[in-house]
View 1 (spheres, rainbow, N blue to C red):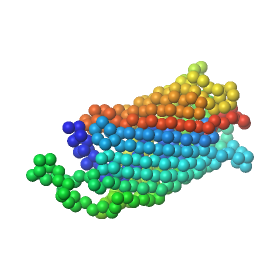
View 2 (view 1 turned 45 degrees about the horizontal axis):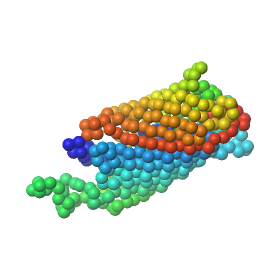
View 3 (view 1 turned 120 degrees about the vertical axis):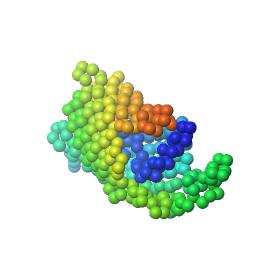
View 4 (view 1 turned 45 degrees about the vertical axis):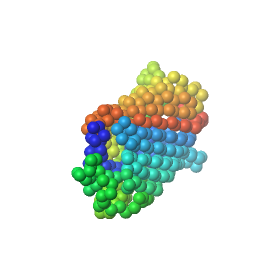
Length: 340
């Protein structure tokens, strides 16, 4: 029964979903999919992030997403406290039994401008090449159901659906702005705005298609507040995304407990901490997460508890997501903290 409910949901919303971007629950790790200006905005010199997400595996063929990101920054003497940021990202996504596949390679660069003693402003642009494909043979249509047959479905019936082909590709362009304020290690603000798919893309899955990959507008804000006299840092955050008629708001809080902070004494960024968090994606899911960071590595796991109408089929089960981040440390030579 739950499979039937889910198939009804997909049938009603599936083609609309094609025109929406992939999303990750660990937004703080999906930096290049949230805002290109987040490239280079971290404590370190180079960073690599691997993410794997699987969704709805309990009721149908799992939706699977794999992502790899790399970013860094270069600050030469000619720029003083400013820096050039750069990044590269790739994702591969496969959705459902009909294998709707999406792949995209992005590359970008930006500039980080220091403003005064505690502020930086970053701007970045990102370009990409994307491909989309669909397995037509796995699709079932209303015109292929025969009431005279025991199982109703007859694959020999003409679906009367006409496709352009199995796959197509297109170029993409994104941009973003980021403002960072930091008062040593006690208080920090990260806030940004970004636009994805600056030129909307026509999705050519089948003839007479009017599906468009709309522009996606993102706004995000994260506060970092270290509690006085303790090793605890509170990180409330909010993310808002709008793409066509779809709006998504995520509100949450992460709590970090530092077990070792070698950077406070040696100037080398190699903190060790544990982190727990809870977020709510309005109208969709609760997101529970935990992380462990040791020296250059950060491992994070999250799970979505579905709260939408789809929960009738999933019984609350949502998406499981893993990420692993490696950051090359650096030694602070000129200041006691970083503002990136």
